[in-house]
Image 1 (tube, rainbow, N blue to C red):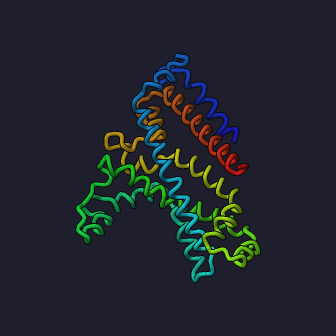
Image 2: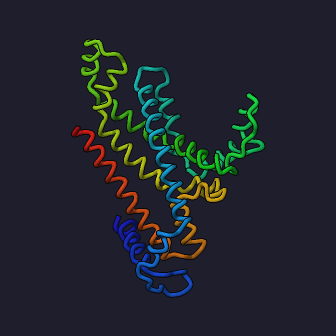
Image 3: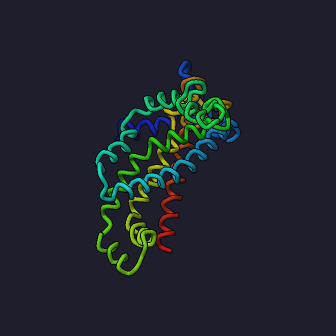
Length: 269
């Protein structure tokens, strides 16, 4: 942790006060990198896209994962197979998954367009459209993240005392009432863990964008991690990229803190 996390973080913080292009010695600029960042339209676009990506995939992914976990928590045939099948995308390298989705979303020979054509739907250039490119990236993020959330929800559901659910049914509660009044409060800690980790991982989206769109078209899929990568290793603005990374870390920390405080307030209420 010290060598691969703490030291790089401190180095990034230090370099954020310098102008450095790997070719010349670092030059002290103080807070200039941060001032420039405040007026950088690319940074604002990347921040907006990253926030929108998070706001969409976190609640949708959590709801779908919980629904799947509730289904797999029942006594059904081949339950082990379905658990493995839903978890498998998480175990697959994101780059490999993104390459497969590139084929699925191909505007000419993609499987998705071929399927929609059966119903008379016109072919869509999913990754070449400013309207559909980011939703396509979101769909991949939701699909690949289902497995991890499902496993955590399954573990939480198995800690719910069966006698409490049985008592609620004897009192005349239907399935929805049992879930709302017994199951949901009992899995609160698991739900909080899924929420926080989902927010953090969604803010760190990178591989899908790098492989599928490179931030395009017209920056419609530009996210913070990819913009940091471009500034550091393409534009050779390493000090500026470090400043952007520091701000990015602060944003993730503040969002995580806000989620925890909101959860604590809701629980106390």
